[in-house]
Length: 379
Ligand SMILES: Cc1ncc(COP(=O)(O)O)c(C=O)c1O
Image (cartoon, rainbow, N blue to C red; front, side, top):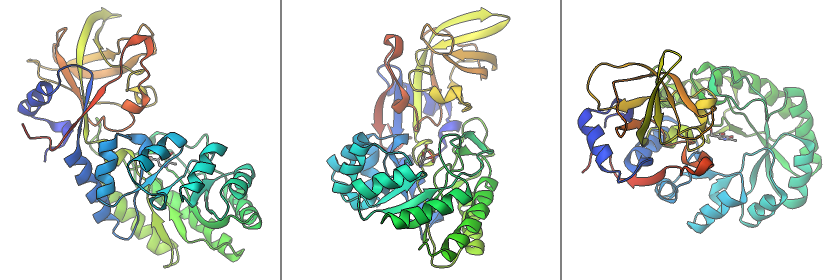
């Protein structure tokens, strides 16, 4: 199957023809399935907990559930969504290091037992609201290879992590594991290598102190192709992680994964329309009916989307902006497009993750509708 970043013009036409209106996010379940199976084949001994924040569409969740995925949730809303689809708490974990008390109560009642923490206050909440829980301490690791870093808000250094392991044990929260996140859209396997080295030192020390560490949650962060197709593939990330774990961790350690972007990113193609054109400061500006407030929020933090057009002629540089009356609403300052016209359609590749979930409807412009399809090339 062709990657959505390399659609032929025939595929592009079929993709445009599917959308009665724009913006529309086409999500190809066959691609979701293929990418999930690639994860499973690449990490045969690891449970995969899909981080549903990336794209919680019920059809995506149902397909992944049928394939045997586990799920990672952060909130009451995400939890209820899964429970409503008949997915039991035993298949769900929560790795948000700071959880609301209401969520903890409901998650515990639903049978969720694995929770992340990175503070004494969170351990206290777990002890009181989710008794009998198994805890994974969130270690801070470098996010230097990531296009969407997550390191400023969460994680503790190794010494603090060791203190928290002891504190958790005292409070009756079983300190069974460590979790880290190398940052989303991590472009180098070195991100995991360095994180695993750091974790292994802390792990050995924790075991010496009596913590029953067994679970090593290596998070998400696995990349998809946007404009740079040199990002490591899932098998390449897997072989680096597995080799490092075999070298650094005891053989009874269990590696867990919670990817979001790399499960659903490639499957989504965002179809939108050109709504305006301008020359500004010597540059060509192209305005779309979708912008940073309507699904492309990650453009403000470093994600560089690939735009596909069927307009004739050579491509040239342009700035691409969204429809709202706000100057932040700029999606790219160095895109390449041919000579598009108002009313033309564009496809934006690899938009299955962190798009519809971010759409706010700001300024009265609706976010993309999702249209689920089954196999890209069909019909
Ligand atoms: C705790 C946690 N786990 C997993 C993920 C999924 O990460 P990614 O989409 O980069 O795979 C995230 C993303 O924010 C996260 O915060």
